[in-house]
Image 1 (cartoon, one colour):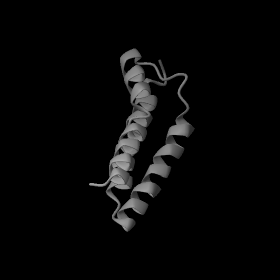
Image 2 (tube, rainbow, N blue to C red):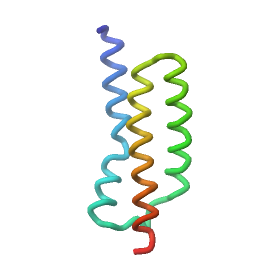
Image 3 (cartoon, one colour):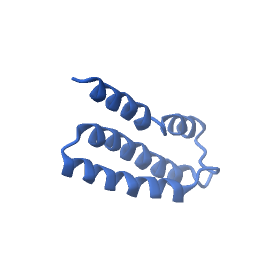
Image 4 (cartoon, rainbow, N blue to C red):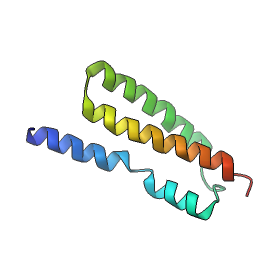
Length: 86
């Protein structure tokens, strides 16, 4: 593995967990009143496009990063829908 690969995977890991603090906070507080559903829907669609792009290029940095981001966005959408009324 080259230095470029290591940098790519490290940057991907940091990017992949961008939404993790918000997921944890929303889950713990059971409140999503201040969360933008539209932002996470846009992020979800964006991650699908990046994931397909990564698959087309067979680039595992792009695939793994955006697969995790897709999960995080999906979880936030579910939490928003579940806790929005509280």
